[in-house]
Structure formats: C-alpha cells, structure tokens
Image 1: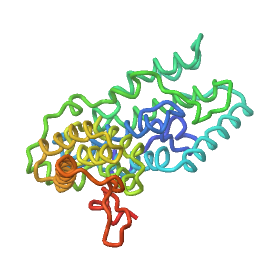
Image 2: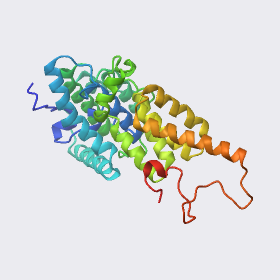
Image 3: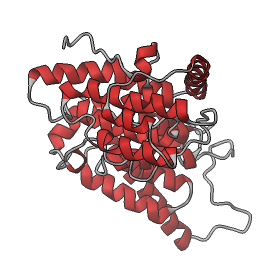
Length: 325
C-alpha cells in the first residue's frame, strides 16, 4: 500500500463520508471526553520520538496515519461543537437517505454481517462486535486501514438499524470499550530518562492539553484546567508539566494539600522542568507568608491579599500568568 495514499473504501467511507469515529476506534456518537482520551492513547503509539516502532516503513505509515486520519478525526470530534454537530448531521442525512432507498447494505466483514441479522438489543450486539477490533486497532500498522473499514461497516449497519436519529449529546460509550485500544504495553511504558524527556517534551502529544489547561489557568477557570490535566495524566502519569500545572490549579482553588502532592510529583519527575520550578516557588512563598502571618498578626483592618504600590489587589497566580488582570 503506498504510504502517501491510505485508502479506506468500506463502511461510511464507501459513501464519501470520512468516519472519524472509526478512525479513533469509537462507536457512533461517543462522548467528547472519551474521544479525547482515545486520541491521546493513539498518539502515544504513532507519535515520533515516543512510539516504539522500529521498522522504517511502519514509521512512515504511522506518520501518514497520524497526519491524514487521526489528527483530522480529533479536530472534527473534539475541537469544536459546531464541527461535531455538523458531522452528526451528515450521518443522520446518510441514514435517512439509505432508509429511503431501501434494500440491504453491501458489507464485507463478518462482524458487520452478523450485526445486520442480530436479534435482541442492538447496542449490546454492536458494542460486543466492536470491542475486539478496537482492542487491536493500531497494533500492526499495515492492518489499521482494514480494521478502520470494519469498524466503519459496523457503524454503518448500526446507524441504519437504529430506530431514532443519532444524537451526540445523548450517546453513551460502554464501559471498557474506550480503555484498551491496541496499546500492548505502551500505556505501561517505563518512564524515560531525564534527557530523553527533555528532548521530546516539545513534541509531546499531550502538549495541546497543557496549552488548553494553561489557558484556563490564565482565566482562573480552575475546574476545566484540572479536568484537562487529569485526562492528560491518564496517558502519562509521570508528566512533570502536567503535575506542575495541576498543582498550580489546586493552589488557585486553595486546595493546598492536593497542590503539594502534585508539585512534589512534578519535581520528582523532572527537577529541571521550568513549570515545576515555578510551582515549587509559589508554594514556598505561600508557606513563608503563612509563617509571617503567625509571627506578625495583621491588624483588624488588614486583609490577606497582596497589594501593589497603589493599593490594588494582585492575583497570587500573577507571577506565572502576567499581572492577573
């Protein structure tokens, strides 16, 4: 198969619809947070400097799969509500068209044929048939397009047999379907040495999560920052930057115990990480302030916030993200 032309010609792809769910090994309408976690797991298999693929041809294929299929799937399912809704709308239109045309679907895989005649709860049969395919989806690079095509055939049969319109907001994903996608030990990979971690940090597939989390920290939206960082840590529980930013987020929530835990993990993982150093400095400053407060009680009219020379309040997190305004 030419590296530059990854062809998937079964399932929804046969109707000129790119099946982003099949690319990520997901059932139709899987929730955004599930899709994001799946994307992060897949990128740990495919991403340069992180993947454990030795064969040069498979490396080139991994690059093509990542850039031509996986990244676009993430963009359309996770990055914007409008894109996601538009994709679901296209699927519903295709579903209506097929229903109007009547006739049986032309599918090749045994799994899709079995789903076409399955009795009983449709979703239960759908998830059961999909699970073993998604479990090994990205194990062997040359088999990935065929597996994506098989999942897309399952998606096609499911959406045409489903009695109601597809609705991304109400869709669910069965337990364990999103937790085992062809990693074969990568999820449990040993922590890299400090020099290797420094070398690949800039190209880490978790960098988008860190950027989004930092944006939330800048606007003091600590809840969303914590959610982003916890999802990233499910992929690599030793990431120093994620632990550092998570510690800072907990400082913003005044959860000092949790902040200490994650800042210590950040320093232990990479003592030279700049964000870890800043986080450690912030918690050290907090401890110093608490000591000063105990030693020199403030007068009744005073408050426990810093003021600048003009007497205006200054954000505790301003030192990391600007002036706090």
